[in-house]
Length: 463
Ligand code: LLP
Image 1: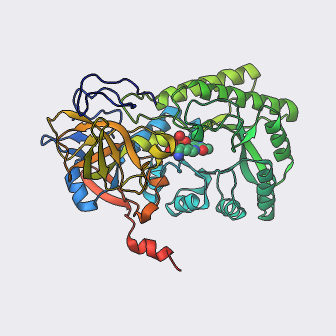
Image 2: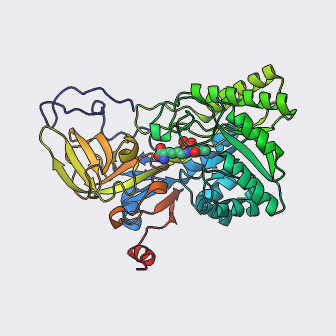
Image 3: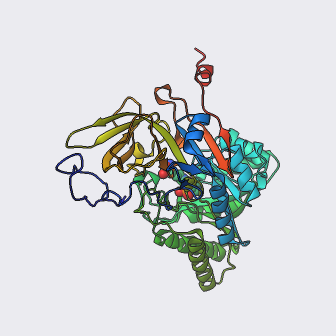
């Protein structure tokens, strides 16, 4: 969250207020391909289109707010990960970023596997035809029901997160007369440079079993003695929205060191390692994400080198990107409702959604971009804060951005890079109806998750 430069020259105010914004863009109508999905473009009329369909027609047919996913882009990104990692590695899409049955089918068709972390995600995956053996089941407190459901379905692996869970999964597998393939999630003790709430490999947090004090080695010891478990490998996930490869490299090195220690102690070479997800994407033009082939190369080289040094067979590598696949492929379309210039501060632009469809700004101080998409404008850029319609002042969608100063109620604006952790963390706060997700491809748009209705709300309210 790198933006800091203060622009020169007055716009709404003589003095620019404190903020994170960059200078006004040279062209407020330009769409930076770094933050917009692949097929998003401005047509000759100035309107923005995705998959060949203009936003006005999309708003007319599907309403606002709504998420639009560029299916072509999603498939291309999934394929890029698949290709980058090749046949000696597996890519598990992290369903928590966004999951629906259409997404599961696209993943299946593109040759990806799936990481789920709840019974609900597992049911969604299975109901859309993802073969169970291509599913990994995660979570730091899986219920007995979830573990049973996963084992009965035949998931390819369960990732064990605690000593209790090692025993619990072994016991359930044994009582079902089977042996479950498992990995042990370890915390490698690296500080991932990201928001505290989404960093997961330092010691003081809830996930995994620590390498540092020998706990992870003890977990392996116990797992190897239990009949209900087939220990296939070690798992590490260091955090999310990370740009610096160094953390992944340290994690890879430490995981391989554990494999060597396990071999030395037990004479067993565990055949797999999973290095998790976490790769950052561009939310604004200031972000510079790594490409899948760079990650595949860096991880592959490190693991191979470390294994050669330790005289280990190179294990099969897997990774779990969520955000990096789905994040950049969608935008949220809003209609502008009210516009409130605050003299000396900034202009508040209220849209018809807010923290119920994107909690990330309020939760992580996340930064987003925004553009006027129903038309172009030659008006001067003005500094805006895009806010929602919820009953609290932290209901901010885009903290600081520039929109044309002739912006008017009824204009359509869009926030790019909302494919990950927006619909999946959406809420009914203020009894908002969660927006639909619409897939757009080659001139066709179809709803893949429909908009909630007031009947949906009332159906749950059985008092
Ligand atoms: N694997 C595991 C075990 C994870 O816990 C996660 C994310 C991933 C893979 C996928 O990480 P990704 O590639 O999407 O960064 N709600 C937060 C992100 C929480 C991530 C939780 N775990 C946000 O909106 O930024």
